[in-house]
Length: 60
Picture 1 (tube, rainbow, N blue to C red):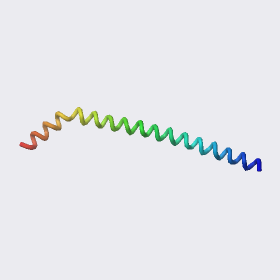
Picture 2 (picture 1 turned 45 degrees about the vertical axis):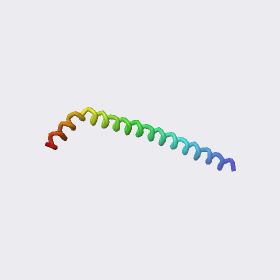
Picture 3 (picture 1 turned 120 degrees about the horizontal axis):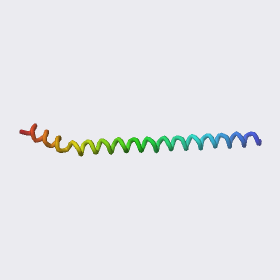
Picture 4 (picture 1 turned 180 degrees about the horizontal axis):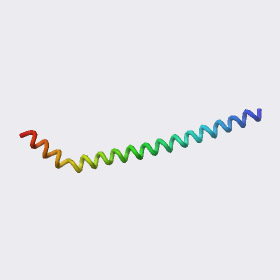
């Protein structure tokens, strides 16, 4: 009986450790994704004058 309690405690610790690692990984991916999205937005904003000029030329 005592052995089963110890096993359950160890299983719970392992699950908690996995949950912590996966949430840290998810947070890291959110940060990376947000950074990529921000860089894409900055690139588009910086290129807007060129894009507008290209559209104007192609409409002529």
